[in-house]
Length: 258
Length: 279
Figure (tube, each protein chain N blue to C red):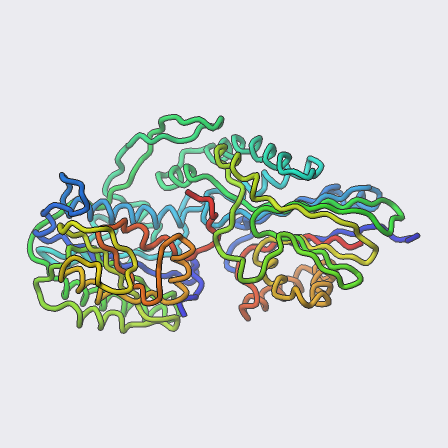
């Protein structure tokens, strides 16, 4: 039986290069939210979301979704997430209409906002060396599982060229929310000590997808996100952007180390 | 090529050439019996500008200056098509265009309420241009002016996504053969590729809508065929983006529209994630 914590969780959040931090449209939520409570918990839940750049006030929508979705246990059907989106839609509308708006903002709001979501739930407990996990995703934010035995899994399972700029996302419009049920993907399995999970938004996910056949790179990426300083991570990501290995976009990532 | 990031630090530009000649008072050939070509053109340019502003609008109260936008109007004269505060610049930033429509018209539109039903809501629509039909069609002069404007732009921003020129016209140039001057315009280039020239032909001739054709076999008259020849072949990157938007584009497809929705021309320029279910 392990004497260390059964799970460690780390995260990072960076705006697109050239944007300010408050312009970042990616969001993440980890429960328990207090890092000190994580080793003593039996379930860790991670929600990562990316607000679509071309939609209105999408960062606010992404934030509302992550907070609300993280409150409920993940099930094997999309109803939990659809109910969360339905509940948060009028709140989003109320938040963006709090002040008089210019004509273009009024029209932009009519289109609504859109966001991706990926949810990961890992179950274990103090002293556990194995357990179960389940995940759900819509859009092109992704979950990666890298096994200690170099096994690999990705949800949604996407090739780098699949990351276009037109993914199917969770809308704020109530009529649209009812239509998204068929676009969710689910997966589940067992974890063992030594496994890593990375949950990330699209730019980083696409970069990691390029290394699908190289689990060792993915493990190192997970370890880097978990252990490097913010400045070191920022420098690494900027190098990746400058060399065009990664698209210039917001980055939200959570690493779960077992 | 044609892959430079479009951002506030590295904006690109659109330059619209707007035909305001006397022949634009003739009926528009797309079946709307009471509509003149000038009316269709004014509607197209207003919707194009509106679309560009909205695409650049985010959570802040000012649109992000991903684009600079200019208008060259040609008819009785050739000059800056904007009026008011916008008239002082050949390529003002999109935020300035957003703040300076000539007027805002109120219209009623059905929108979703919080419960998934529909309610009437008053929406403000910007108008920058009213229909004008007066004088000859000095298209060559307009293309020359465009070349001068974009030469200055490219001198200041040599690595920008290549400028896009969109010529909205009924195609009957009266100051010479525009093919040569169009070729001179598209010979300008940034490090990311040549200037693109798209032509939106608003014709009195009845005919099926045409978008991104690869040849001129389905085009009804000499003016359409000439504008097709003047239009840039879509680079592969943009061809792929247009296909993602649902357009049927084949290799050799050109940036040419015949009696079709001009706003489609700009839908596929990539400034970030667009939801597949955005309608």
